[in-house]
Image (cartoon, rainbow, N blue to C red; front, top):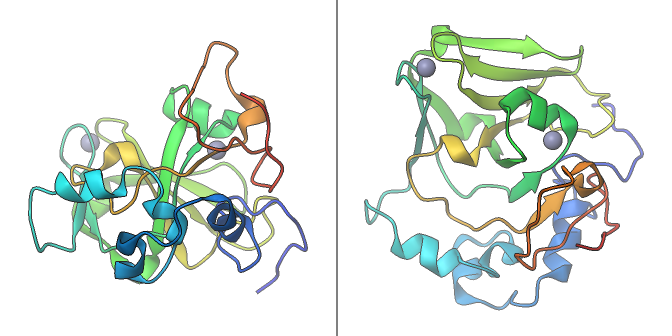
Length: 205
Ligand SMILES: [Zn+2]
Ligand SMILES: [Zn+2]
């Protein structure tokens, strides 16, 4: 797999990358919840316990999502890789939203329950595609088509908008990324780090 030798990993999955950097930044890495999934300690920093308590299906390890009309339904199995808010113009324009909250899982832990054929994939470049419901227009998914995108989304992951989920996530959002592109009227005083692009560099509020 071709890897950009960059610091712009869009979603931050590689070792030494954005996620790891975030993990180092979070102050509560010893939280017992983080040890339960054995992966990303930063996910426990804020709200993780609350998210778990809100689970409507105790014991279930499936997170479900859907489009507005319900033609497309899917599920994913935690642990998720991360949860972060993206302020880049592509996300904003694709979703018609001020920013978009993303998570991801390895592709083998994502499955459509129904409506896969209803999903359209808009290829904004040869590298990436955005998945949406052809019936109602909900934007839900994102995936890499080939290596080389400047933000290096991973080919073996499927990226899912947290707003499309109807089950609680297994972790709380941990960061804002591409914050330099945020809309001027957006204020997010949530205390989470705000990054330039998907780099380690943080920006002021
Ligand atoms: Zn739909
Ligand atoms: Zn984005």
